[in-house]
Image (cartoon, rainbow, N blue to C red; front, side, top):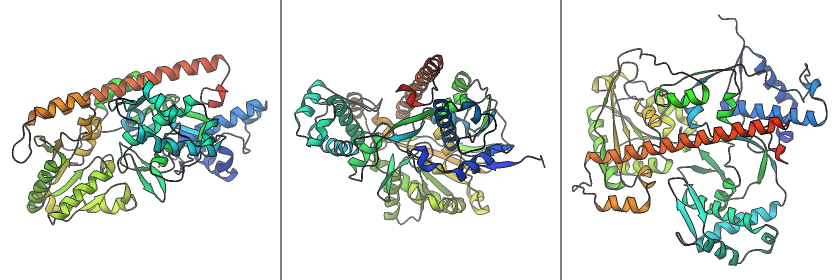
Length: 507
């Protein structure tokens, strides 16, 4: 025994409720005891929210001229729950530090004029049906951005509106119309979110898991609610905010583990001053990569996947099929049903039975269709019969925006010296291919020649790789830009004697 006391931070997402309404004294005591242990473990978001709650307490104490009492041994409700930020050890470090680096953790306060704002969201959801692409608004799928044109602004101004919206300034109405367009064009049901008990629940792109209690910021969440004709939730403004990358840069010492850090080594060094060390595998890797297959459309791709699955099942292999969304997993499941192939499906709808599904995924002849939930950290154990037949075969049905996410999926095969293989099946209707400008995509499709089954030359894989590489560079650039902005804001606030993490400092 090391003689260490371990504290566990349970996941309790605060969402956007004001701190005074959800932090009870006994909860604070539990949190304080957890952080007082030698080792405390929990989720990045939960620790981030605790950090923000402490900053809010300190901000309130500063206003009341009580700061010395709080940070000199006070144990009352106003005392911070966290100790210092000395050392953080992060599992799946590239996912937390890179992929989630820009994710803002926000504690909010309710805004005034709720009735008018609810009516505005509902009106915008209907108003966008009168707007024309490239006339009233411009849409850039690559940057996930929508902008009203001058003609669009005039059109919006002339549309009939409920009287209650007249209290809202015109510029703000334009912004909410753009968010309604984003909700319609960018945010897709069963890919970006699911509807559960009448509420929008966000799906994490990297993990495929539901992010209970999280909301998109600045009104985007309410725009999606209005689009789906759900009750529009309380609109909030930020009281305290910090991004994941700023949170972990706050620690004096940082370290982590992951199987896919090497490709992100430059960014880990530049942003966090972390070096990447490669640890040899415990046993030789027997994973085999089969040539990528590319198809003209989704239907041809699904047909080829089903045929391949049928062959693999007959061989006694276990098959894991990775899909990018809930919708895609269920579309493929319908095709397998038509062919009489048994399968198990794992997506955000079935997260409660995830452990049971994974425990059977290595059985001979077993077919498991999964979103990214079956990627990081999932260990599929093979039965003897499966191992003798060639192990687990992973079918990736699309490429993601990051090579590291793809590597996590194919890394489910051939673990710990087991045999295994993987193969990508792509189509020119995949989401990654759709980020190309419409004219560029149309030109490529015009010159695409496919055989009778709809399969294209394997050289088309190069287009997908270039698009993926371009998106990785774009996202890296965006994270660098955000980091630069955060550094400048922090310096400015500290010069003024303000807390850079409290949004109320702007007031």
